[in-house]
Image 1 (cartoon, helix red, strand yellow):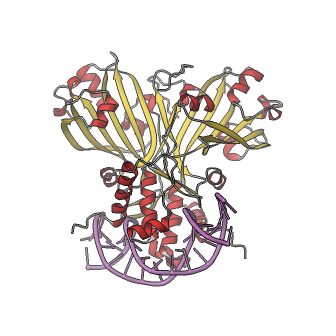
Image 2: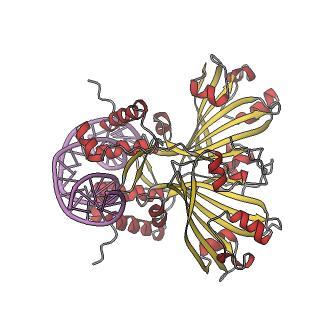
Image 3: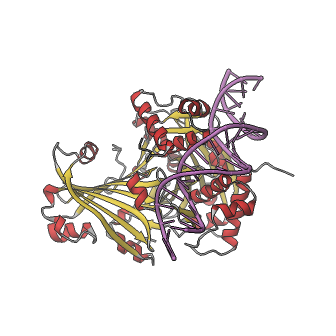
Length: 245
Length: 245
DNA sequence: TAGTGGTCTAGACCACGGG
DNA sequence: CCGTGGTCTAGACCACTAC
């Protein structure tokens, strides 16, 4: 009996085969951890490790205290295409929705002052929204607007595209942006919104936007479920083109 | 006694404070898990969970069976700047080195055929290299070259920049590229090279390059340690400019 | 209220790294 | 060789979800 592979690996590999062969549909629920541990005759910790490995592969995902589910295809997200979320999603034949979680007017934090190059005591508007892909929360976005450039915007409908609102109400065009993409741990409020356990890994995208006068008008913290997105960048083709695939 | 926070969170937060206050230097080793579990009077599993949370935050990192260490700053990687690794690193005042792990000539796998739009039975060259940042392995790169475009390249020095080799020996310029960025689990050989435990999360960047005649000449699988890199994209400024900060 | 995953214990042995 | 993290057990209680 060759026992080079650990039990965790064996269970992981068996589960993976079952997922592929069994033709489970995205979103379908897996048996509970306790059931799997009986089924494979191992402890629950070992099952958890195997499930975590499959999660890292992007084959399944976990919702806090709800269970494990078969993964959905990743959304292909091209930040340079400047397409707003709902259009991006519908072009990929998926369903999008947005929920505004919080709207506030507050003083910029030191961290934000650094990113947005603000003076002390600058007032900013803060908009927190959760975006859903096929009814599943996959993205928490926090927008920080320099209040100086957006008088009265908080009275508007903020569940629509902010970029469009900037253009139609204030005449701002996005001239250039900067994106920083990096994996990080989900802060508590992000974990809650995305149904993750606290400290789980997410993909964080910090975006800073400049208008046609090269003024830094707003920035955006995006927290994506790491298994829900693939960031695509084309080194040509970053105009207003609608090609994403 | 308010006990809302779990022990794991308490230990995590205490450790984090210690790391910040104690002024530990990047690369410095933390006490062993067993020592920490005695120090905090909890089981080793709880310590592991706390350490994993700090790892997800990017504050510490783990090397398989070597221990836990204080994290280094992330390398800022701008794929659109077309700067090769060694220059990128030295401009950020860090130290770079490259080790060629494997060079082979083989038939394209089905997956590769799909990505590179190859016909069946196409011969490709495969170059596997490990790149080091301050003597720490942070990136495993696998290049797949369409052998048709690169006769005799395997005899060359492959530890240098391939892009430069393409230009000087074959006259190929990079006209455009496509990047797909997504977190995924490290395959076994990647985990080994990067000193990770198998199944750990890495940041995978698939890059496809076209030459001046718009021919798909090669593609590249990059596996980054997730805590070692920040991918930066500027929506203007993607020429040959040397600005990265 | 029943079922789920989240957290936690107090041990144990194994495989690998490095002197 | 010893020290390290990797893996694993067989339980336990808690917090939250969903009904």
